[in-house]
Image (cartoon, rainbow over all chains, first blue to last red; front, side, top):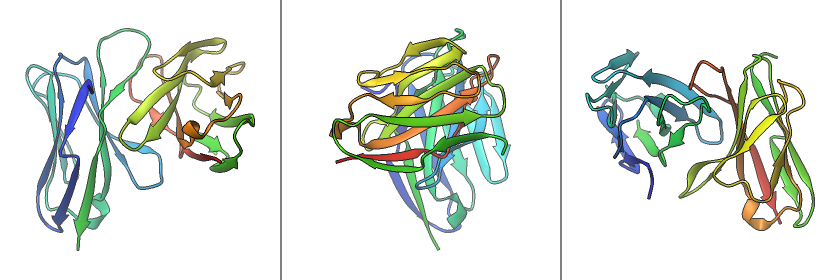
Length: 113
Length: 112
């Protein structure tokens, strides 16, 4: 089973609608990283969350990490076609020195104009 | 150009051939990673490197070889390509003080 579960697996929304993507772990995480991948391209870093209860925003995207540091949500307000792509969460399991991340399977987002 | 680059971007090879995928970064990041991305499996770590001449296995290392003689380069070699190695391969790097990984554009490899 995946150490990081992402939901939903895919999402189709109408332009202008809000949406939320979730990333859940059964264990407390050291840090949570959100990335976006456009089809056929590499991953682009969006945001990092490290403290329980932390919330960050960039343009119309807001990411939150719960107090237990086991669940994160990514919320897009008033979606646009430019938001389409695959959103992946990655997480550091501990403060070890190997810098590895574990990954969710991704959420595929389509935004219909 | 600054950043992290991969070459080739696309490669078709035959079963049994040796293939090397190149990764080059200009940030002098200590850590470098090789992933493969497949539908249904997401990103899986093949090998990673903490510094020049230090490499370690990831989740799916079988059939792959890496080396890191210089900080900026981290080539991935498929010694005898198999069809199951058809995938998109991503290289990434990060600072020793960070977990934020920066990704290359990927190499789409098809083994026939």
